[in-house]
Image (tube, one colour):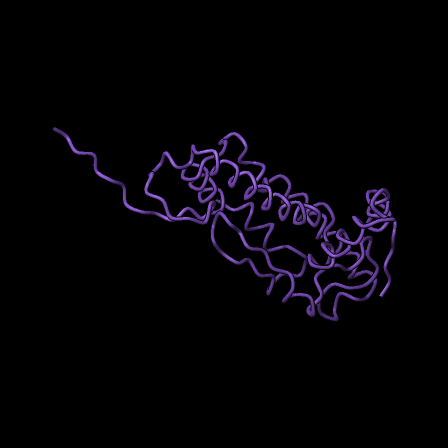
Length: 197
């Protein structure tokens, strides 16, 4: 007669509960629902970072403390202390090999589709384009005479804004009467406005 050995209790950070079901826990409906919400929250944060990937913006020293990013796959807080562009360290972290390794382990342990890994990371090609845009902004700042005065300021294509400021702007634009104009306002604000300091 064989006896079934009960699994040890382990904590599921997706469901935020202890269980003794082992690997089969990730197939339960409640876990799948929690996983979907968990990944959607991260996608929302990643969308904010991707905005700064497409539109590099210099990071002012007074905004450094508010510009942080928690990576749920790596369990680390990515801070922008030594970055001259908004979300620069977050972009480099999300494109790194350690993040990819931790992401694969998370998907294996908690479930999810391995073919959707690129939804939760930044590709090297995108980082190369971002770095090229950053170099262009640095050159523009140097030509305008602001390059020798510390962080990049000066004549820029995009307004100075940190991650928290962007989230606040988007939150206000979801309220009436702006909710129907949100896309057009954001497009105008970030593509057409020229900021001179």
